[in-house]
Each structure stands twice: as structure tokens, then as C-alpha cells.
Image 1: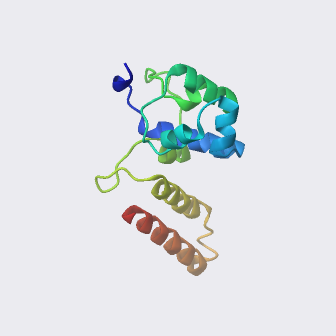
Image 2: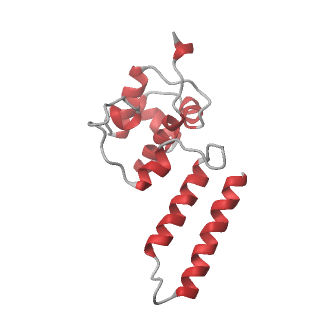
Length: 145
């Protein structure tokens, strides 16, 4: 039974996101959810298959989130909520140069986009160009890792 449960690539990322959001260490979350901290770490790293529903429920209870926040449930296109670009870049799968980007690359791409959106181009073109160039370098370097 356990062999047919594949860990969605985003499951571990979501778990880590919500754990960090609450300010919990793996040990603290493990204590609250009654789950081994090493198991939590391996799930976050994508080294474990998807856990059983009772484990997911314990994690969600400890994190004070709904089960649907942690796992993907198929919905029809009409029911799909509109997602922010931030959610798409961090939590959904996509390819960059034919490869799945890691969390650091995703976060750097998001930071680059945010820098572009926040820049005051008309007033500070030179300063903004430097900021954008730094973010581009961070993003490109994180793709190489």
C-alpha cells in the first residue's frame, strides 16, 4: 500500500513553509504532532513517500492549518482559486531550462520579480539597475546549485 503513495514535490516545501511560518523547529513540530523529527525532516527534503492521512492530520493540527493547505486535492477548473504569482513561483511545479528549480532558485526568482515591481524606475534608474542586476545574479547562481 505504501509504495503507491508518491510524495508530491511541493508537499515537503509546503510542510517546511508552514513549519517556518509558525516558528517551529522540526523537533518542536514533531513533539506537537507526535511524529519523529527525523521523519519530518526527510519529508521536507522529499526523501520520504507521502505520509498516511493520520500523520498529515496530526501535522495540520499542530501547524493550525487545514489539510487542504498541505496536500493538493484535484478540483475542476471552475473551482480553482486564482493564485498569486508568489504562490505559483514557490508552490507549483515548473521548469527552468528543462529542470525543476530548487526552493532557493524559486525564492530568488520571486525576489527578482518583487524588485522589478517595487523599483522606482523613473526617479532612480541607476540605483534600480544595480538592485535588479544583483537579484539577477543571485537567481542565476541559485540555478547552478
